[in-house]
Amino acid sequence: MTGEDGVLVGGMANVGAVLRRGELVERPAPSNARALHAYLLALKGQGFDGAPTPVGLTADGREQLSFVPGDVPLLPYPDWAMTTTALESVGSLLRRLHDASSGVAVDAQARWPRDFADPEGGTMLCHNDVCMENVVFRDGRAAALIDFDLAAPGRPLWDVAMTARYWVPMVDPTSAAGYYPTGLVAPARLRILADSYGLSPLDRAELPSVIEQATEVCRTFVAGRVADGDPAYLQALDERGGWARWDRLQTWLSDQRETFKAALLN
Image (cartoon, rainbow, N blue to C red; front, side, top):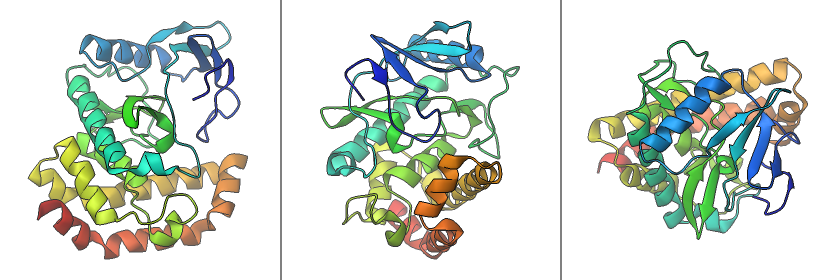
């Protein structure tokens, strides 16, 4: 992240609208900002220090959060972000988030976004968007998560699956080329993520199928944005190979399902 005041870069949402002002970050407030801020403050009360602290809401519809210092990997993803140490730290950080989140009651009156939410629901808030651009590193290790706009109730396993999509990554070699360093072995890295998170044997057996489910949800989300004419998603879809890329990716995940399961369980 930038060390100076100005526009913060990264990700496809809110492009150009996220600003740093000293030790504060100002960004468009989600519609459920009050419930989300209460959740983030409750995480602090549970001892979790790996998220921004909400400061307040402005009259013009923006939210203020504490600035989280560190490094955020951006495209094309650098080698340092894809080391075994980095991957292990992401798994450990996600587990710490879930342990804290399990002690926070979900506000049933809030309208939590459904974009990336677990279709099966759940009793704990999941981040749902632990992509590369939403993890802050210090000294090569994941230190904090940012951008909780897509947080919604779900299963912890769903959050692990969504995280694996980006950090293993769970994409076919052709799709990964040009965005990730070469030489990443998906089955081995999926095992590393599961081990560092402390995933149970039952959840390990289910994880490959849940990753496929999460990929379908992500495809539906992109299709909706494209149908709405969102220029960022139209451009990304074109640059990354169109719908043929999604077809190839989903076929690859299905073909590799048993290989992933064996890597997780053996």
